[in-house]
Image (cartoon, rainbow, N blue to C red; front, side, top):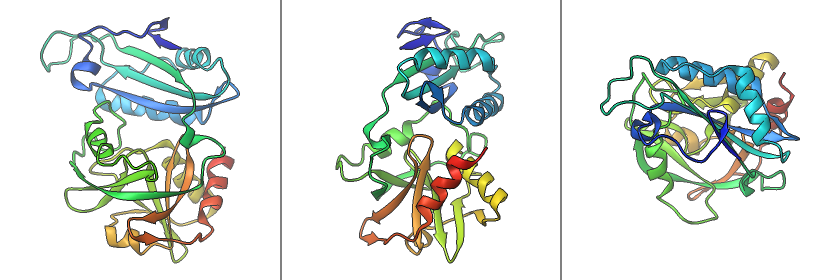
Length: 268
């Protein structure tokens, strides 16, 4: 099911600024037993991203009810999209914008299924992310960099591509955030210049602080990635996955992936 402003529909106004300019934000949630997983975290992040772009965030109860409607089958994925709505031609935002909200339900993809492999293969992407601190961390609708990066490979054995910014700092995967372990310390890339601050990453940061683990947010280089004791990917659909191979580099399990999955799911 797809709901547009609460009504069953698969169409939006051709003048919608989300379509014209990527002027909006979105979240992707896992649905289990008809309920959105980590709902409080996702709504808080959606509200923060809306505020960063000057969008009116839809009411939480309203959105929660619409998620329940598209999740009627019990399990899968819900995607929430909020755009600045329809407007006249030109970049200037409407004086009185009326946001468009879209809630879309879909089956859980095979790569996010409970029986999907925990160990995955990754590659380096050639595309470099542009730094724009004003948009850093926000899950905005302009995902063209990710589209181009994902188009770089069609080998089904490759689960994810890793992205650097134009300075050579490692930022993220195409669809995931990164965490590495080295000498008992966890590290995740600094997203002050670009990248998406995902909910799974935020939960790991919170869980680490609550349990006394060291999870540093810092600039990471490709050499630091290759020197890691364990390299992991995370997002809201897959949880934490271990990178078993990245190009010619391979890793044996170091025990961090199940530990972080436990922290991710046990957090209140």
